Length: 149
Image (cartoon, rainbow, N blue to C red; front, side, top):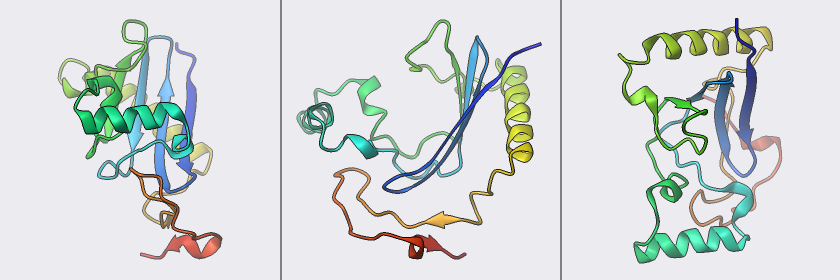
């Protein structure tokens, strides 16, 4: 038996749909919009984000730091948080080796989403109000941000 911890990330300056579940050993992340860059929504004015963009321009950014800018991203990520606390090695890239862990955690996550009436990411999307890389604000607010498919 496991104790599970769940998390979600929806939107701030742009639409996100990230869900995760973790145990003491593993963390599984589901990204419904893997084709979009994650960026650093709240960090654009921070010196740390300025340092990251400068390092990216200069070619001195590390692989771990580059995760902020990567896209497309995997739909499913699995991390061994006991041995990889910074979540740098995505075990879901070896699906045969970690099939049981991925299947179990994904099933648990889907059950949690159903129990909490989590919205379907394909039925409620919002337009971005800022650029995902530069942080430039588009000046759009309010409920008119929803995109109807």
